[in-house]
Length: 448
Image (cartoon, rainbow, N blue to C red):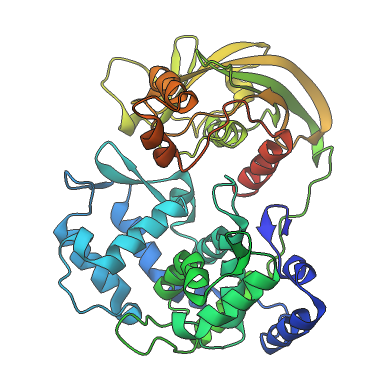
């Protein structure tokens, strides 16, 4: 159903029967998906303007959030002005928790890893910094985020619903809930999605699967908000173009197994990373190019292990500390920007170093450079071995994780039900899928 982690319309067509497949192909013909299109820079800039505003407003210093974790009233008013007539809202626009368009807009930026919450502030993510001045790349990132899931955190049905919503948009069809719900329900059911393993999905259930994608398309001006106005408006001209562009963008091709040819030789590192103190022991063996910056190595480790990149990180090599100085600089240690140095510069030979993620839970990782080889090809990051599942985010560190597993393992434990609800269902601490880990690495490296 997916191609290299990305929902593909061709693969979706292969899942449904011949009759509905023919009907869906008619919609694809209306969308002119046989004709690849580019997204002009001016169009991209116009569409991503609200997200560009947010990235600029957050800036290098961040936005201080309220004690409850919301944007302050003054910023909520600015956000409503930035969204303009793309959203339909008649309530007050000062408290974020009561201003639904701004709340969902900010959450969408977090979900697509443009910003994150950190120590009471909203700050830029590495992707947000990289994309804030490139509207075409930002637009591509936003639509790719609807169809790709590098963390395997979303059900396929969510991304398939987004694919169908983009198809309806590309075809210029009405795309709000009342019109799109039956369309989504029919084709998601054809593709094998049911309710309770038996009953067809309802239009309401199917629309809920596409809600996040619909919100993003509204913020981009691709479709018109239908909260208070006609909920069955057509896509905008910009929206048709963006949807055609999104569905025509190929999934990143699988790399040559050897990597990328280089003019000279390239260093290939084999690293073993262990989550210190974890029981069962969480570890991975990964192959990476030596010219990764430490910031990029952080992204690789997040993908390989299964973390969600919600928090700060730092590396320690001997007495040297590598982290963003603005995040934790008390003047007592020499701190180096992890964007400014590469793995091969700080670890030119085999040896050990440390990686810490989330200074609250303090997840300590031990890394060992097991070997360094020279090759004519630049290696692609991949996972070659490992064991056991990554703990859930914000579980409370090693001690909290042990208590979490104890509660889950004992149905009589007083926190058993609450932990099951918190984690969203059963949790298998022994689970490890090397192929899935490598797939997350492939997508993460493609976005670096």
